[in-house]
Image (cartoon, rainbow, N blue to C red; front, side, top):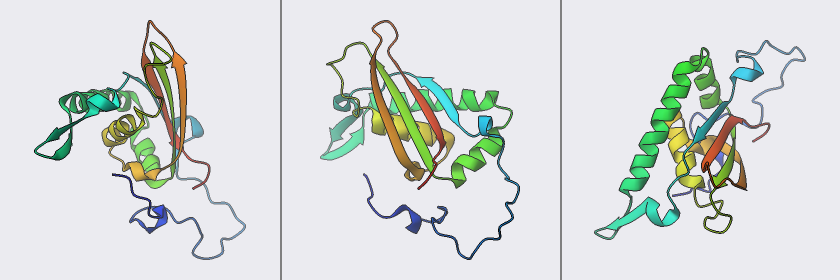
Amino acid sequence: MTSYRSPDKKVGVPRTTPRRARSSRIPASPHPPAENHSVALTLPVPPSVNHQYATVNGRRLLSSAGRTYKAQVGQLVWLKLAQSAHRAALLARLQSEWLALSIRFYFTSALRRDVDGGLKIAQDALCEGLGINDNRIVETHLYKHIDKDNPRIEVHLTPASRP
């Protein structure tokens, strides 16, 4: 379910306006250098919208294909984080800032899938794997490409330039 409430009303989300005037001195950033503040992953193409959810006793639930996809993405995210020397600083930054998400979908055919059909499950799986709330994403970019031999999605999550 999507919420359309203003993001700054949520707990733990950075304010968009300063509490008081800041001094002209720029403090040293507590964050790692720019090359260590984003996550880039290549993931499998998510199941189509028709296969992501199932209706059980009148309730709409994530299907077994959807649960399998989210578990697979969670493992890939965990492996990526395990390889990072700056994972604690990276996670701290992603958990404290507004985020921008870019997904490049590489499908086997141009007409079989919609570019937005895999957005929600890919976004949910990525954020769940990182242990962050997906309401921190304030900017989304989707691209559709064709690669018959290697269908995939390339995901890039980085702090957003503005809320």
